[in-house]
Length: 615
Image (cartoon, rainbow, N blue to C red; front, side, top):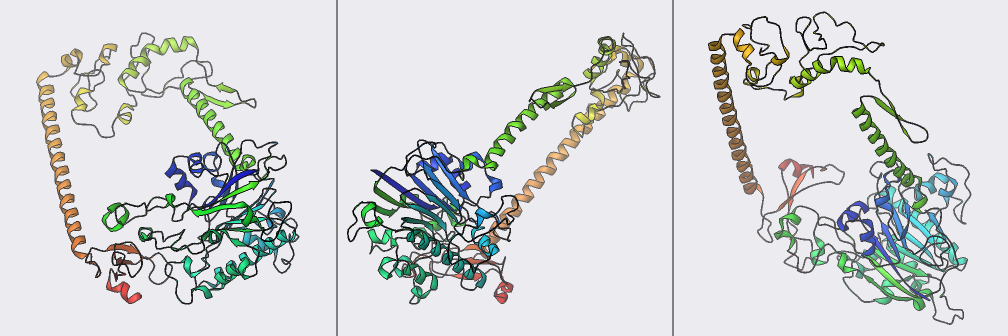
């Protein structure tokens, strides 16, 4: 007999949670659980990478959104991680014997490429009234993973959210839970045991909500939830309420940006439900899966964003205007006892270890580094490379005759030293072609054969803007391009130097003219640098003065809330409507009960009169 721990957690994005904990493995290990169910992973299959979906010691199963509907791409998504010692020939209950994406059964009959219909037959009774497209829409948002652990079937659910005035999403939510209930009933009719975990986006009782009004429990989805429970003639137990029937302020979710966790002003929408008979051979009255095998169920408060003793939201600049680190949900766990071993089995094919996106990504990375290495080899050898079918790198580069390389080595070294490139073409017989008109050629001794006209690419490889002084310090043959008073003398190898004018240059030019020109250039450089420094300093001073003016203006224009006489925070409307994008001011304190004077006072003011009229 074994003990098991199952955790459900809406991570509000798997990437930021992995970043928060350092790695996926550290995130999973922090729960010390056998099965971990995540909701709202916000991953598509195209984004799968090994470090995001796989961790040593765990098998993972994902369902991702397939919809291309605006605003819902890269949205929702669920994942179930199972801690195991072996994935082949294992008798561990945590390793599922089978796994399924979605619950309508329609994804089994659709091809992976383009999700085109092949053939569809209803998985369970009661779905005849739904078309294949309607069922695909239900399962296409990545809201369910089912894992069969032999002794029980586990549903990892992320329930849809629907606001009061969105009739389309309300109908979607109704169809979602209606079909899901039919699947549960079908399994229970077969004598199976069921655990349902996840963010259902429903708080069933008034005790489960911080600000429940008199009509709170009249909502049809809350009524539907309560109809599932044993107390109302259903088959399920609300496991948390079975263990803590009267606990108040037991919330699992809080508003994202209002800081409501500071005053525990939230709702309980993350649930664990259980149904079916116990595992005892001789079942007596009062025995059930929950009564006999559930030891404890509770909320993991240590994962809340708000920690006891933390600085109040309105006093902490970091959290005053931004989000707190972590998910806006808290995990819920259930511990099970007296669970027998399963029969020997291996991991299901839905495991991400068999996912072509992950496998393909790993292969692509390997080949990318191989190609990069071969490209570097090509650059070093002067030719181009390709990769043969057997994976060997084959170099294809043009080879020059040793005699040709030797004949031009002295001249080319001089040009490289000067940073000047003289272009020449190579013929098929490994010798130089005749240069174009005006081009300079060299003999083996390095002397010139014609007038000097070279493409000076050194300036392009240097800074795009050279100082005036550089025109006189960097010379070719002691002669600058701009100096017209040089004698037309034959250049020698000694003339190719970098630095001060050579003696050869001074012999062919008037010394006083050079000295005077250098002094003028040096003086001009100093003046230009002084002007640039003064301009930069003036610009910085102007920017500082302007920023101080803006800060002062902001301080004087931000209103004070009426409840605490404290500066408000600026917000922007993000909900679609006539005021979308408009700015307003609100009390900076965390949201909490109206009876608490330390909580948000509810102050609200539009930033402009124009916004007020639009409202």
